[in-house]
Amino acid sequence: MIVEKIRTGNSNIRNPILVSYVAKGLLPYHGLGSGIKRALEEWPEIEFIDDHDGCLVQVTVTRKPVEELDLENEDASKTTNAPRNSDLSGQSDPINDLLNLIRQTPNADYVSLAHSLQVSEASVKRYIQKLKQQNRLRRIGSKKTGHWEIIECPSRTSTN
Image (cartoon, rainbow, N blue to C red; front, side):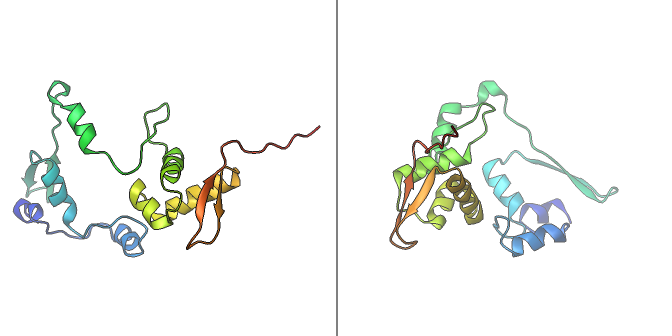
């Protein structure tokens, strides 16, 4: 494979196990061979070095120096429908993101929640199951016409 073909989206399947997960719908799918093209759209300064002798292509992504980053505009352009909460490590907290989204749209279904949170429907179902087990969330009514209810103060059973 030569660099020009890689840049246009041509690809060779190098990891058939990973592709099988995509085919089963377990991983997000944007189209085989679309990753490099999408990366180049976001960051055109990606450098490709064709090593014919080693039968490989070396890819280098160079970051901008921190001083050159416009963090305020970047953060504003990356907002989603759901508010993102962070834990102490700065990582997003999907459970609290889900709760905040349900507060805003209690009639939302699994598909719309997954879309807003940018996670799979299976992840949303797993988070909701966890919240139900913790007695922090319940469903009122049917799947079709019901709504979610957040239980703000879980009832605690005392053992006296």
